[in-house]
Length: 186
Image 1 (cartoon, rainbow, N blue to C red):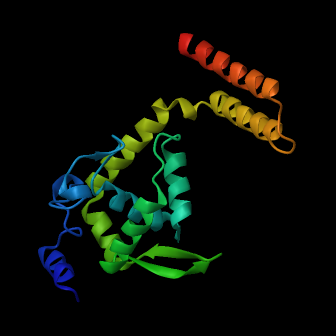
Image 2: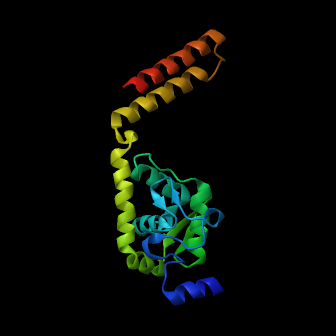
C-alpha cells in the first residue's frame, strides 16, 4: 500500500478530504476554489462515486450523466473525469470492470461505497446544488433545447457539401446575428 493511501485510510478520511468535501493542499496549482460555481474541489469525487454506485460505466457516460443532471449547466471535460477516476482507482474506491468499445468501464468498490456513505450529507448537498442548477438552467427548457438543436442541424446541413457562396455565408451570418440581437432584447 502506498504511504499516502495508508495515511488516508488510517485517518478514516475520504482520500484526503476534510469536512464539506474540500481537499486540503491539492487541486489546480495547490489552490482551493470552485469548479464552475457548482462543485467545490473534491465534490466531483463524491459525484463520480454516487453515479457509479447507481450504475457502472465509463468516463464519457459520467460526463453525459453530469451534463444531463445539471440541465447542461456543467459538463466536465475528459481531462477532469479520467484523472479523477484514476485517483479513485489508486485509492481503492473504484475498479475497472473491463473495456467497452475501447473505453475503460468502472464500478464502485466496497471501500468506495463505505466512503460514500460516511460522507452522505456532503454528497446530498452536492446533488442538491446540481439539481438546483438544472432547474435554473435555460437549457432545461425543452423548447429552447429543441430550438438550439434545430439551428445546429440547419447550419450543419447548409454548410456541408458544396461550399456556399460569399453571399450565402453573409446571409447566414446576418440571420444568426439578427437572432442573437432579438434574444438579447427578450
